[in-house]
Length: 465
Image (cartoon, rainbow, N blue to C red; front, side, top):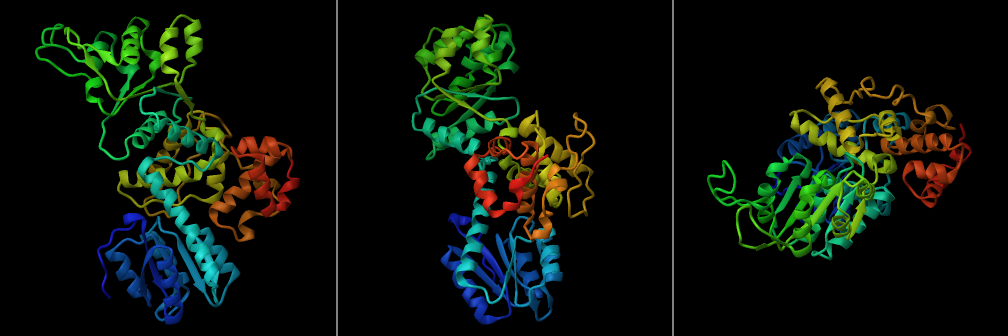
């Protein structure tokens, strides 16, 4: 078998390994994959599949259950361990309900029975491609916008990107991802060139060094200035200057920022030459700047100059729909960091994570996952979620949904993600005593979106505490 060196994901394409000994079905599946923009690779045995996956990475796998040298069911665990991020679709002519449930528990993406309708296979591939695209975007941006709240933020960032001269103020609690939003805005504003992105934590710059760090300094401008140096403003010219924690800048230094923002001009410390800045200003704060103005700690005229285009990033508790994607991406990052295989998350653990309020937001979620990963045995297929260190006792108690749902999710032959969604919706409905609007607000979705999901699971409508 000849294997090319094509890299998965190149130019928006995807690679699909089809493990199938029925030549007519394999040909049909390959045609469907090509029609969806993919590159199919066909093998007919488990041994050939091992060779193929050892030589290259695949983004999607179609696995027949009955093969000449063994059962796909038995090969699935080894296959998914070697390709942890690739959806695996099992295809069989002799469906077994218990087998399907067990495979789903162990991370199978979908289970199809022969004869497989072409439209059903196309729909399956499109769902898998949607998942891959979400993963790829998350890999590029460490950003997930499944929830309505984050979808709105993305739309606002795209709108702000159209006006490169405007100053953007990002607000939100600590740990919500304001710097990531600033980086995304930068990418959207300068899509066709390698423009600089300079991030400055305003609170971390000592007051006596603030002016020289930002604007630069001439030789001899202060004790120790033995050479001329450029500042961070000059480094960001033509790109984005991101000033984080802008509310921490001392009052006596805020006037220097005001001139830069108003006139886009500045002078290096010790220089009489006026320089100009031709980039974008993005600032961020976790404070209520209007309250800081009333308290006399922040200049009102600077606030007016900063608050030209303001975007508030929601806390994680208001965007719970993003948690599964964030967990998947962060675990991939952390596994790579520690040089180990990425474990899977059990549906009940994902439901518990989604039910927790995370006062530390995305930063706290990453900390939970990192602690859990380091305490999980390297040979374990499943993440051992650490429930003991959290500051709030009972934060990861058994979800209400597991007690009150009319039918255990796994018995409904749902995927792990669907099971998590089922249990979480049941829990939030119970906490809201059946109220649709309150439950939707807790889930971070619109009431209409929740009602659409209840059409799929009507037995949850009666869920109450």
